[in-house]
Image (cartoon, rainbow, N blue to C red; front, side, top):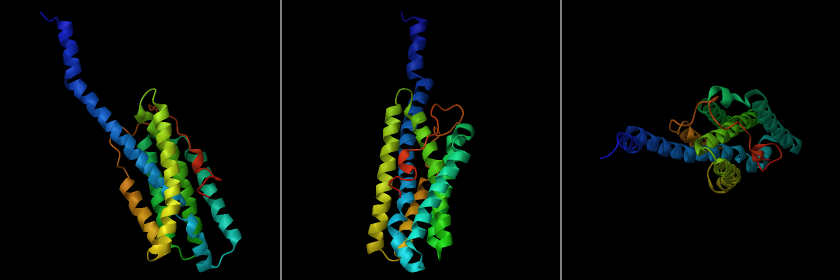
Length: 230
């Protein structure tokens, strides 16, 4: 005769609670990979302008020194994001901060699309720095949350792989499109803007919940001034 305790254990393993647990695990796994893809898209947009500066220089007639200034304002955007919003995702929740970072990335692409002089290039680069500073730290912390206890290494590998791949693909994509696509100063940013819009909010429920989350917001070194984005 089966004891009531054994019966209760079996119900727990195979009942609604177990089904909910499996659902959350599957949902968290999906969110983990989608968030990694969003991180890749964000860092990709960060390096799209880099191969195009020579074309901008020829078109707008600014000096080589101004290219250095453009890189410097990007660094300013990253630092501002770190100072002002470095712990925001721990307080406000991951999802809100991630969406704010994607909004900055989209606005950066719009600024480059509309650029008719140096002013919008500078604005676009500041927004790009803000997007990196806001998004990368929150995304890394969210990946740690989603990976689960004792799986921080998996989250770190995903964050590093997304960063490095995005940084490389952004420059490569812009360079190739500048050679083969019409409107070289526009087409790459259309691709970037569409990719960013597709990445916005494509994470299931587990991406959230600031102060209760396990990970802390950190910025990947590859996104800092002096990295490959320069």
